[in-house]
Image (cartoon, rainbow, N blue to C red; front, top):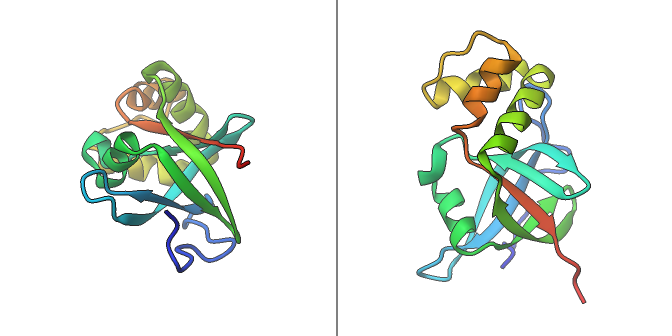
Length: 142
């Protein structure tokens, strides 16, 4: 499931300082391993959260929804995880919290998805209802 080469150098960050990580998954129909760099917008006690900036039709999003057992590469370590979609209301709250911490990335994500925002938490919350968010929950490996 994991790729042979690290996709993201240790400590890699987006222009606004947000961490970048790699997710490794299989293409559902072909079973071929795929690797993609994602931005973790939130890490909490339940796992890692990423947003699909290109919506539900993004290849990586469709792949992890079809084959949710993935390997995350975080820095120099690999974490086995299960991907699950985040409910719309929770996605709105995630976006409302993310935007003030990473304003440039939040504006860019909104623009990419065709949303104009006024910068308020409520505006970002409403946009967050339209962005597919995924939670990657680490699995215990026996």
